[in-house]
Amino acid sequence: MDWGSPEFVIAIIAVSYGGWIINNWIRAKHGYELEDEWGGKTGKSAKASPDEHRKIELLSNENAQLVGKIDRLQERLQVLERIATDPAKRTADEIEALREKN
Image (cartoon, rainbow, N blue to C red):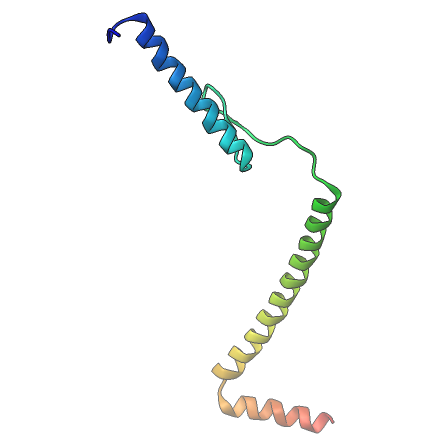
């Protein structure tokens, strides 16, 4: 086969096209986005199942709970920082004022 012959060029094109097909097949099998001829991406267009919606809802609820915990911990940390950086006399006076109320 001659390097410049049409058969050689067609063989190169066929091997390249076959590699592209195999690459896209493997990507689709493993859930990756597919590439088209112009470098664009094509994602999966399948609808989410009810199980996936339930998982999303549970994760959203858990996220809201964790955000609440973080907010409460930040408030407590601010109080502890204030106690640690305030002069001892003022802190002692505040504690004594709280004792007198009870």
